[in-house]
Image (tube, rainbow, N blue to C red; front, side):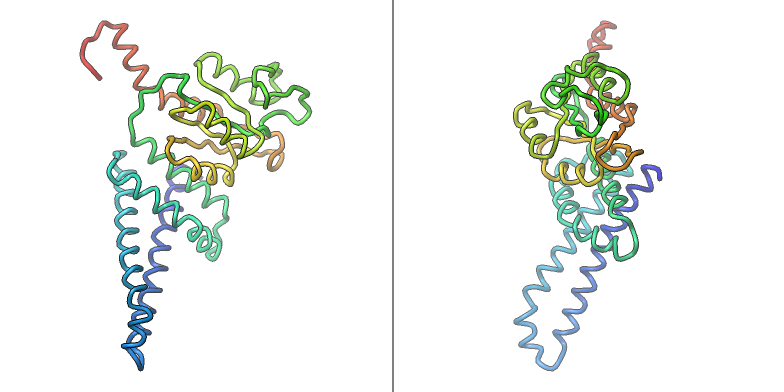
Length: 267
């Protein structure tokens, strides 16, 4: 499934969730017109007003999100509202998606793609050392004896797993690379390193929970590949890691090129 279809899944589920709330609101309005409207109004009046306000906010946020994705434009003033809405509605989209037969991993993958695209509407000009590549330890070959979660430089680059290639990216580009054994350790490393951007490699479950935990740091998520099942000898598309890295470094590279060419105009 391509990235466009993945994004469409989550956006469609967001709209379905709004429809779900609208049906609830209409049901409440119907109840209010029954035998004792004064009593039912007292009970449901405030709730229906709050629900109506929430539906309006949801629709505005989704509308700006779709516009942002279509135009590849950053609506900075609305970013917090958009992120809060898509995070708040996430568990409901999972529930409704399962009811209509959509696998949870597809929904989570779509969520990751939407969040990635929102990040890519922004402009960044970061130094390599300000970027952290964060990956799970299941990328390491299961029979490897070297402890890379303590120090990734212990990797011998034998070629049996992607860790050696990621280490080469770290060495060539000067970015930070962390192999974490779990979410708690990952959060610890983020606090210690204090990166300005993160490229996170993980499965759908870990990426969605991690991206919701890290709200103040831009994160581009790269879904891992699991040819031998979850959490065992997993792989990663290195081209996607490189693309994410180029995105965060893109403006820096343009500035360096213009300086080498003797350009004086600002970018």
